Each structure stands twice: as C-alpha cells, then as structure tokens.
Image (cartoon, rainbow, N blue to C red; front, top):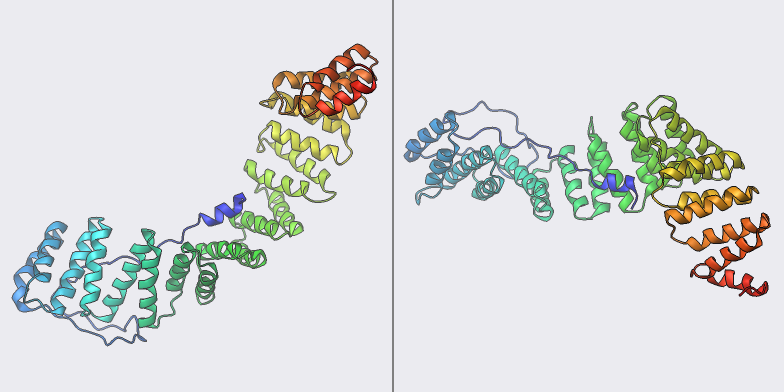
Length: 419
C-alpha cells in the first residue's frame, strides 16, 4: 500500500450532529415549532411528567443549575425506577440522566440512558429521533460500527430524512465495515444533496473508490475536491497521487508542476513525489534531474545518499555521464554502507576511468556491501584495463570466494589457468 492510499484510509469523518444540548427539566410548555422530521412515520408525542414527581423535578432543576450532574442523574433515576412511573416519566427521566452522563463525559453511561429513553417511546419526535442519532454517533465514535449503522438505518427508515449529514455518517460507518460500494453510494448521495459538502466526505469517498479498485472514480472526486479548494495544497497533492494511481502520470505531473510554479513546494516530500513520477516516465529523466537540483538548491529537498542516487540515475539515463558521476560522488559520504560507492564504481568503469573505478570499488567493499563480489569483479576488470595482471588475478580470486560471483570468477580463472 502506498503513502497516499494509507493517508486516505486514515481519514475520519467527524461526528456530524451536536450531542444533547439541554435537559428536559423545564415544566413550562415550549413554543410550538415546525417539526424537524416532517416525514416521520411515528406519531408525535407530547410527554408530561406526573405531578407526583414534582419534588424530584425541582431537585433536578437545582442540580442542573449547580452543574451537579451526579445529583441530576440520581434524581432522574428515582423517577425512572419508580414503580408508578409511566412511559412519559421514564422517557423524560432517562433523557435527563443521559444529559448528566454526557456532561460528565461518560459516554457509555449516556448510551445506556439514551437507549432507555428511546425504548420508552414517549418523547416528542424531535427529541426521540435526535436521541437515536446520538446513539448511532456514540457507537460509531467508539468503533462499534455495526451497532451504529443499525440505529442509523432505523432512524432513516422511521424519519424518511434525506439530510446529507446523515448519509455522510452512514457512509462513514459502511466504510469502516469494509462495505465500500455501499459506502460510496451513501457518500455520493450526501455530496450531491448538500449545498456545502464537507471536504472529509469527498476524501472518504476517494478512499472508498480506491478500495473498490476504481481509481478513475477516485480521480473524478479528487478533481472536484481540488476545484472547490483551488489553493489547498493537500487537495492538490492528493489529486496528483490519485492520478498517479490511475496511471495518468501526465495529469499527475501537470498538477505538481503547477504547484511548483506557484511556490507551493515547501516540503521535502513535494520534490520527492514529483521527481519519482518523472523517473517512472519514459524519457523524462532530464526533468527529474532538474527537479532534484532545484529542490537541493532551495534547501527544501534534504541531501541524502538516496536523493543523490536518484539524481545520478536521472543524469545517467539521460546520457549525462559526468553529472551522474558527480552525483554519485556526493552520495558516497552520505551513505550508511558502500552501495553508493559501488554504483559510482560501475559508472566510472563504463566511462573508462579505470583507476578511479578500482579505488571506488575497494572503498565500497570497506564500507560494507550486500554483494561484495560485484565490487571485486569491477576491481578485476579495472586492473585488467590498467594491465596490472597480478592485481587482476588477486581480485578474481577474492570474487571466487563469494557466492554471488563464485561461478563467474572461477570460470575466468579456469580459462586463464589460474584456478
């Protein structure tokens, strides 16, 4: 899995609806407002607390004013657990207890009370259905996606709501359950029906399309996201990466080059992403070299054996051999082993700089190599060109001791009668 895919997978859609805003303590009747869920199949309710519980109601009100939520919960449960309590009493009591639990940041206790308030089936529709959304959100926030989705589906079925936020929440839960196709359907609906779809919705939709192996669809969403955030670096970087995943490297490079021209390359990885794309494109090695040189000159691209190694490759495969040698020479002291020196030795040998190739190969051996036999063969060939026969034979004998070059070195020694 590449970096951009991991990044997309790590995105989270934040919980979308505020948790319970106020307790249901007030005895006075609130002004009638338009219903929040006008298409709900459930008949609306107007719950009332029995007068026998007025003492507890007064105590709850005082506790709430003092932010004494432990007392608020205790008095609420006195009502809920009373044998003479009716559905209205229990519903309102559990709603208040849930409020107190949330104010104490005890989501699990709040979940218990919210569920009880819903099952009492006595609260007005606006409250009843908001509690259902809160239950769904708590489950999803606690990574219990199956439970959260079940409550959310019940909510949507009973309210007939088409609010985009709810479908974005559903898409989030479906994505976490690896139900990517269903997640993309829900997220698409949220985005298409929203006046201002959240960036996080589109980002999660991109991830869902990736997991369905639909990079073209992911790229389409990424273009929409970038278009709505023209100056947002993250959106543009993601767009370039997605074009790359869809094998549309020309488009990917176009996005990154536009960013570079606008001075948006201010991190090491910006230059790395662009030059890596150029190195994966036929005939674009010169462009890769130019990007690396600019990054190094600006100081944004950090010097390392890896970066100079890529620079050397870019120069070498664009037939700029002297520049490739210089780049490898800069890579050598920055490396943790002799591999950069081995590459330097290879290029030097190919360019007929035999003494330098021999010395570079020996130095690489001294710093440690995965396959030191390769370096001994370079030494042998360089000594041959330099007509140092004794040194050449000695190098072939060293190569013959190592598994990666044993056959090749022994064959030469055998043919020359030195085995």
